[in-house]
Length: 333
Image (cartoon, rainbow, N blue to C red; front, side, top):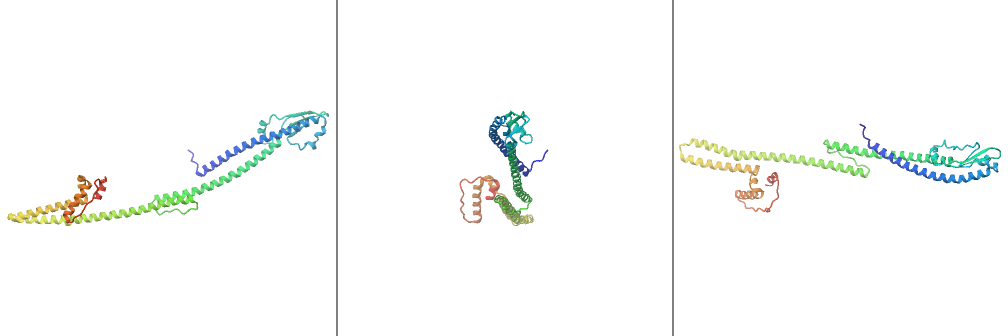
């Protein structure tokens, strides 16, 4: 299984593919325009070739080497051959298919020699080849520059992503004080600011959770202390008094009046212990909520408080209270 390409490799491949596509289009357009230009040039050369073919039989001096050496697009063959000298040009195969119908004019001279005058695109093909080489060199330079620029940009982006990944890994590991530096680029600075804001929020949330945990532990400790005091001061003293009265009841079994008085005190202590136990249970969890609901339970609690404290108070409740979960109702109560 092959490894996936890196971001730099994908960017380089994309740039190279775009340049290749543009290069192929430019080559096609250049060759198309070159074909049109060559045909125009060859049409003019064909007129010159016909003129030379007509005049050469009457005036062979017209074909003097000094006069014909610099003729463009014309080839003079004194042996009568009709081959085309395009094999040395890299565009020979392309030209062979495009210009296979070029005319050849054969002339029989008065001195017995034969002459072939043919129209040749070799000169134009050389110019086209030079233009192609210049185009290829330009594209090569532009391709290398674009590859370098894309590699530089990708590396800068990867550096930013690497910094962000390291920061996120550090934050995930518990280092909530990790912060990214202020980058020069606006986009990188905004992204780093978002990461820093997230780390700041997590750090603040962690501090709030620690404070809440400490507050909950403190509240739990206070509840334990209050419960211990209530059991010791309230129920503990009542049970100690009842135990003493039971010893006294056993000692005075022969006195009916004392037995009756002690029995009444035991009943009062039992009632007091029951009330204290109910009050303790109500503080731990209001069981009345399960029977009456939040509104009625609050009203009953207010009435009991007024009866116990002797202080008048006024309770205002909506007719329909919102539906709450059990733990929420208990906290409200």
